Amino acid sequence: MFSTARRTLATFAALGALALGGSAVAGAAQSSSSSASATPQGGPPAGAPAGRHSVNGKTEQALSGDTAAKVKAAALKKVSGTVERVETNVDSSAPYEAHIRKADGTEVEVQVSKSFDVTAVNTMQHP
Image (cartoon, rainbow, N blue to C red):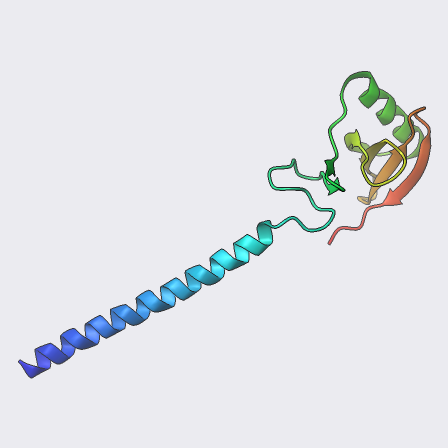
């Protein structure tokens, strides 16, 4: 009988240790995901489309229609490649930008003015 009580106590102790360890792991995972979802400076806010970022509370927006076509044409006139996206630009004086993947695989951001002139070409640095 003493042996049964000891086994029962050992079983409860083991289950308690597993529960405590599991909650510690869950707490660490929760803490990690909370900090990972925080918006880094210049990163997209939660729920923003991939590839877009914010500066001073303004988030880049996808371009459409005639403006998108003109930005794309201006960018491709300067840099050949595949246009990944065209959008507003929130981190420089040029109001528009086109993201282009060149044939060698490098990615550039082509900044375009209101008059659809290319003002800068920046090589993208990915972490």
